[in-house]
Amino acid sequence: MDKFVVLSALLGILLVTSVFQAFELNGLKNQLTAKTGAVSFASAPAQPASSGGAESYEQMMQRMHPDQFAQQQAASAAVGDGALNGLPNMVGGC
Image (cartoon, rainbow, N blue to C red; front, side, top):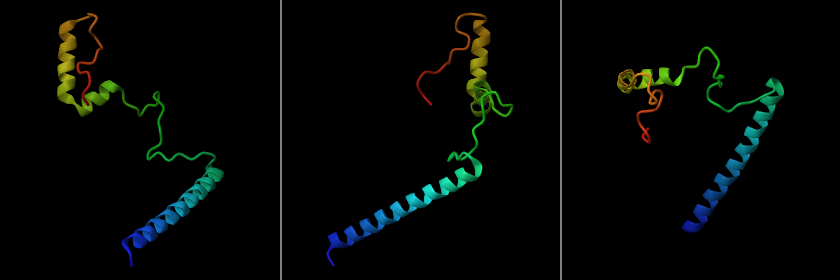
C-alpha cells in the first residue's frame, strides 16, 4: 500500500473517533446538567474570595516563597509608613 493511503486512512479514523467522542461528551454534559442544574469542567470547585478556606496573597507568598516573604517584611519594616508599603518587590518574573 501507498504511504499516502495509509496515512489518509489513519487520519480518517482519528477524525471519526474524535467526532464520536465530542458527541458522547456533549451527551454526558447534558445528562449531568439535567440532574444537577449546572456542570463545571473545572478540576476543583471554585471558592469565592470571601470563603473561609481561601488564602490571601500574603499567606500564599509566605507558604510558597518564605525567603522572599521574609525579605519583603524586612523591607517594609525598614521603610515604615512611607509610600512604598504594599508594593511588590519584583516586577516581571514568575
